[in-house]
Length: 264
Figure (cartoon, rainbow, N blue to C red):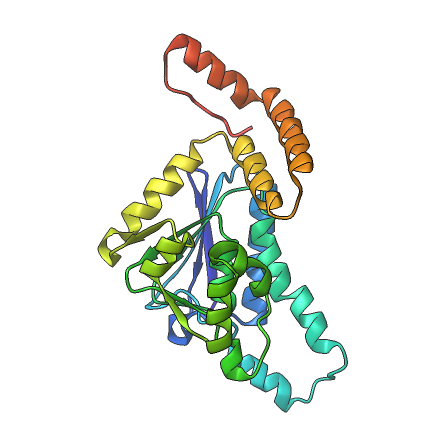
């Protein structure tokens, strides 16, 4: 049975983690499927927004510990093997979300731990239920935080709070995540679908190419200087000014009618 299912409707690609009996913990095959889907969304003009969500009580309890233990029992080679797996696995998954040209919404209920939390950190928008929490459980297994966590989390909530979460494996509640800016909305379970549709439907009708450029500018701004950021911003505006949707935005304004953006 496929633990990652997806569909596209009305410009929205919905990806659902569907292994609730294991708290949607990711096995290597699940991780690779997610990478392939985010890459496909990046390249598909029909997809204008991606929603990543999960069935069951929990969003994602990180990597599947059982599969990691199985590797140890099989005594796989150790020299550089963990490094190779991390760089081609968890880090590549996080990069596929960050580099996806379409806006990515992650929907969290219950636990988002380890790589599950990192998927939320990498997302463009996060909607959480009021019982959701984020946690870095690596320290409890005697491990270093991987999957881009040490890069992403300080940029979302600040270095000091990130250290607290990572040193102690402390949970960050949905309300704390909202206060710190990690979550965009916190709603009850009954309100979750409506909140997701509100974001996704509006983004599916938005000027996707403009959002793609804005996403890139914002993500890059944390690692560049002011002069470089200003030049890149001006270049992005010039590129977008020749787009179909730029022309549509101007025409709609002049004609005093709603816009009908095509996404390009």
